[in-house]
Structure formats: C-alpha cells, structure tokens
Length: 212
Image 1 (spheres, helix red, strand yellow):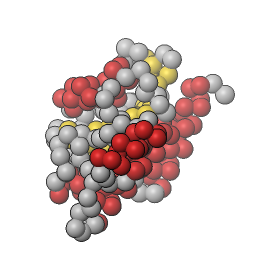
Image 2 (spheres, helix red, strand yellow):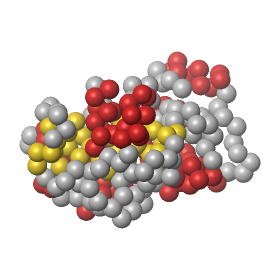
Image 3 (cartoon, rainbow, N blue to C red):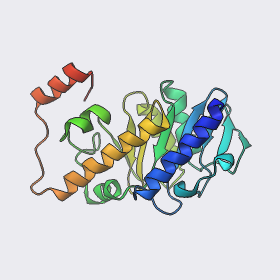
C-alpha cells in the first residue's frame, strides 16, 4: 500500500473514532496529512464519522486542488502549520464540547487556555494559546497560527474548537483528546485545582524531555 493510501485510511480511522466518541458532531471538524508532493485534507462539510478514503481531497504543494472532493475551507490554516513546521505530519481540528465551553466560560489565560493540572497534559499537549474569534475559514486565523506553529502543538479557536498538530494524524488526535479531557476536569472541579508545582514541572521536564 502506498504512503498516500495509508494516510487516507488513517484519516478515515481517526475521523470515525473521534466522531463515534463525541469529539465532533455533524459535519464539524477536519483532518489533514502531509504528503511528499502536497497534502490530504478532509472535504468541506464532510462528516468525520463517514469519510470515504477515495473522496478525501488532495492538494499540491502550491495549495491547488488536485483530486477528491472540494477541500475544507480551513486549508489555509493547515498549510501555515505545515509550511512553518517541517516536523508536522498531521493536523486535527474538532469542535469538542468541553473546550468550546471553556472559551465561553473564560479560559485560564489567553497565552495558555488551561493551567498544568495533570502530568499527561504537560507531557502530551503542553501550552495551548487562545486565538480570538474569527469566522470559520478566516485568513486572519491562519496568520495567527503561523506565528506559533513551531512553538506549540496546537491552538484553541475561540467558540470553534481546538486545532492540534503532531508528527502523525493519530498522534495529533491523541493530543487533542488529552486536551479535551483536561478541559472536562477543569470545568467539572470546584474549587478549581491548583496547577502542578514548579518542582513537579521541572521533574517532568527532566525525566521525559517535555517542556511547559
């Protein structure tokens, strides 16, 4: 099986898994993967739970639509991540309920939407900044993401949802899931939990090479 065929299958498997467990609903969200000659990205208004590998859009390195259904309107955002960060192999965007609710209720800080409250949040996700509200597909969002694409593993789009990138589509989905579960913990705990101490963060950094 070619690399492209494998990535098409991976996108479908990840999309079906996220949709089946309620991380996204309806036709919300999108997934992309890097190819040697461009990118694959889910079609506009496609349901992540019912993706067809053959209909996933392919674009070349110039961003031109080559095959499949029409690419997601967030293509420009995904391209900025790939162009700025050569280590990225996959990008996942959902409208996950707890994270969207967090932006409605008020995030911890604009530069970091959640404090470091669990070790796996620190190890697998890291700091996630807030991108202020813009309409879906706005080029202004892509410009803001370009500024942080090499420093963080993702961003939180206010009132829309997380965009997370990693070395593969699957790893991006794992990080996104960890972020969503952390948001659930934060929103459901009263009083709010204290962040991990500086000593605890330093130990995680030393033992696992993580960075906060």
